[in-house]
Image (cartoon, helix red, strand yellow):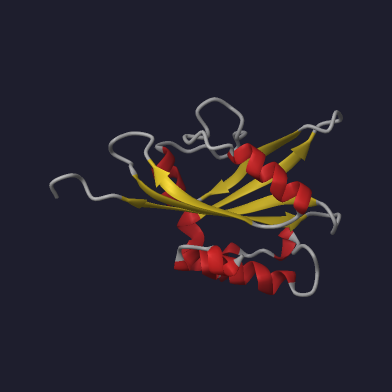
Length: 155
């Protein structure tokens, strides 16, 4: 996976996740210390995985860095990803996160990001699974979200 990641800061995040994981399948959320990776703080999102009795999952944003807020255009801390307007791209990120939970493996994507003319550019996302109390179950997804703005036309 490491060689597929197209942004050096996200390689740094992946390496940190690998160090926390050690020989285990999943690192624990309790071991994750955002202060250990200060350059990444503006680009982090921590999503809590909530499960309903019928097996459905929802993802609640517990933390988001300032660069993430700026890319979206407004803060969404405490909101669910499936609420209207929280996800500005419609590229099945909910399906990707469900796969991260089911497979207990990271997911990376990159591509263009253009919710409006002012915020267009390249987007890099790395979603990493973390265990909560049960070391075998994904209860958190830590995401590195880097949006590189394109230069305005004629600049």
